[in-house]
Image 1: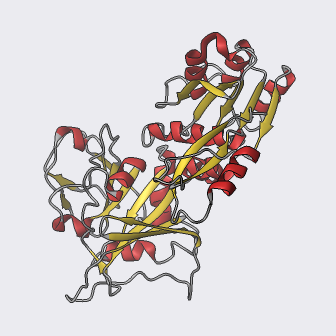
Image 2: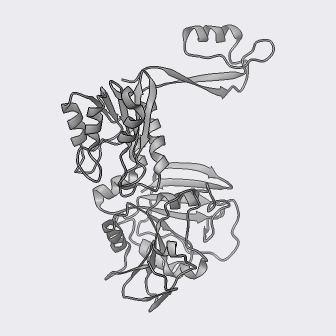
Image 3: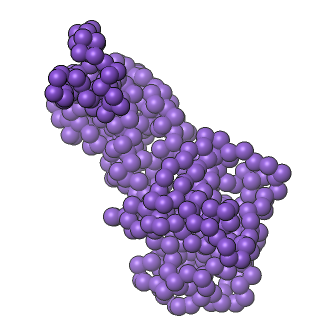
Length: 401
């Protein structure tokens, strides 16, 4: 198990009367409190909370490292690893992108000879097969670590539990399931596609403060650091209906530094024999897929745009195609006034095609013409695991179906 060393985090105290000088001294002598700055007269003005450096602490560091590669690893999962010796991290690593070495390899390189008899923490079970990279289990065995703590077992049948078994057979102590829910959330898209063969789908929309669906986003949402820019960085693809193309000047783009842009999957349903796209660059054209029921002309004619003909365009057929292409996550961006998206969404919930919902509530009142509403073939729906946060002048609410 991890060393029980402690780290300290200062938290402002609401009053100085909560702890008198004698009480503070007694707590310092009997527990892990640390004194902070004092006002004249000796009264404490800072309350200090201690957190134990246990297995969960180090696993959270793994998840933080893994997220450095957000949007870059698909179809692989995001994975982070730390090597710990005597309660201190001596090696760090994460999987940067598909085809590159895995997190364990980078962490072991960083640790060097200190990895021997250390504990390796990894957010996802180490692989035990030869793919584009050698097995991570063998790297851990060669490094002579004494223990491996795993956040979650890999659901991929090629890996599932085989990595854990190999490590245990070699004499390494293995603990599984530390901060498991956090590790599962990190790779929810990878897990869903591995199990179902289809991408993880998130429905996103914006509401005015009086409950109307809007075509515009809240302040700062599209800029660097904005929630929408970050979503575009995170997801493999975004669905764009043809009846909204005339209302946008450019295709949705993430403005995060080094962002791997999503595929723009244009749904050409009932669009006649031609389709006019917004202003394009040669680079953006390489990530445009047009799905249509027959071959159509796409303007402007830019090399790199991919045309795919489907017998029938439904959300189910679109996701089947995306799954075959290896896409793990799809953003379904609903804006009022799109009949195409409204049709695609009719049976989406009953067929379990949508896994997550992100709703932005803007801080202004919409007094314009009423836009379309989200309608499903269910009388009522209850979302699970709701979370909310402030984003500039908007409130974001997300939950799972």
